Image (cartoon, rainbow, N blue to C red; front, top):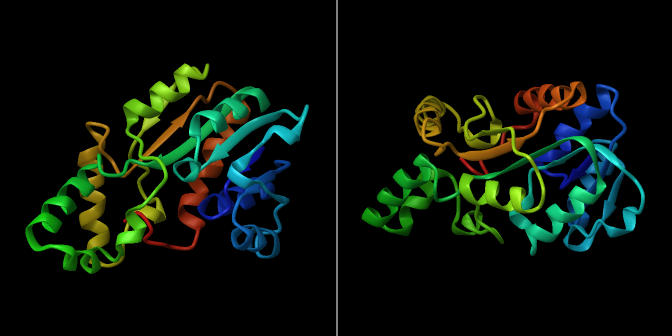
Length: 220
């Protein structure tokens, strides 16, 4: 398994190792790569912009990314993944940022009261910034144009720790996410092609990582 990015995705990869996968990871942040090596015990290489070309003839049964929104050229990254991927599966997760129902409601509040509303959502303005912003439609278009057959797209992952706050906010956010997911406007976009037993195992690891990773509020 190849992992692209080692922040939230690093805990997913640690669980994959515990379940018997041979895992390699790439990361463009020295700090996050060091954390993944020392805390999670992962095999991590530094890649500027996640340039995967020097992985050569290596083929991976699964490639998992929770950070495609941070790369400069997501099309090039996806194309490189296609070349490295054995015919099993790809698991891709990106924020459904600004298109999700919860972000639409937050935008209404911010437009009404101004920037002072940001602390109410436990996030600062820089947390809104990514290199690329996706919707379910643009993710499908990108992957299909790069030769992938998409079998599942979901926008609500239940107890995913990145998209739920604490206390009373947790229940409210969970309800909003569930309603939004009915029209693909949940808080994140997860695309996979679980055609084989190995890909089903990837889904199982992802589900476990959602409950075991340290709670954060990066995309609440």
